[in-house]
Length: 392
Image (tube, rainbow, N blue to C red):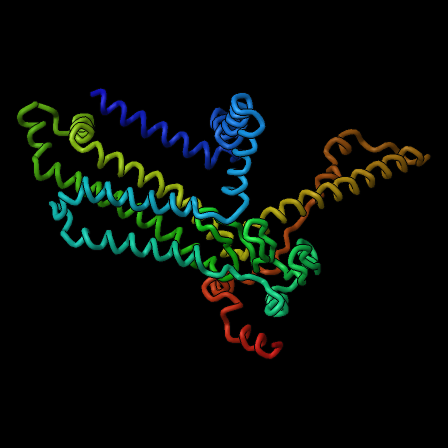
């Protein structure tokens, strides 16, 4: 029984750590212990570690840690790519070792031994395509084509030169400090891919997220069907009801069935829970990026719009406050005017309530056009290549 409780506690702690690390900054968790765990995991733990190293080894130890941090976080490196391959390979190995012995089974045919390997292979292929494909590097040879493809909106993008590359900076592009290059339709730099996600490989990235979500669902459902098949083959329900006198109802049988599964197939249940949790995280991440793609917005532009709306809102509030102050001064100086009803003044709308900033995304041209831009980026179209050859 102790083993079952250890597994349950392990699963709950793993879920808590994952949710706190990935979602702890969400507004819904503000002021909760999940936010505090997130702060500790992302900032506090590393800060305490640096202080400990500095106290024990001095400035040399701290500088060594900062050098490692610079290599891992500020320069291109394959560390997270290796970790991804290790997680994928390790998970597949444990699934195959613990579960393939029960395939074929009561609910599954032997073909799943091979379809699972094929599914993992496709996942690795999408990973390689996203990692090693050109995200849309802006160079002197193609900068004029990118400027034509992505016009300036003069709101969050205006005509300027990249201070590093010394070439005109097309709208929606950004100079990645890690890759040290300008990337068209820059979304973000993905450490797992060791590559930027931009105009030319956003489609591969979305396919990678969707496929790995489906892969996790496939793995979790397959293990679930294996366990259900073992219940049937070993006649566990029949034994519990006939020999142990357990009532043949879900509420009565469930605790006994769960206890038996945890005792006999704890590895499979741990893998199934792990795959289910990862699938939920991938579903959330894919949904977020799918929404961005279908509105033709990038992660980088989301932050830019937030900054612009906040800044513009403050300006409009200041203007409204100045207008309200001027109106009140004029009202005080006006003589002979009958006093305004107190009730009317109470219910009168404040000028600050009319302060609104509208997001006008000129790149959002409708569902199908936005989807077409992801599937077939402008730089891969014949018109882009023809204009490039003419300018060359």
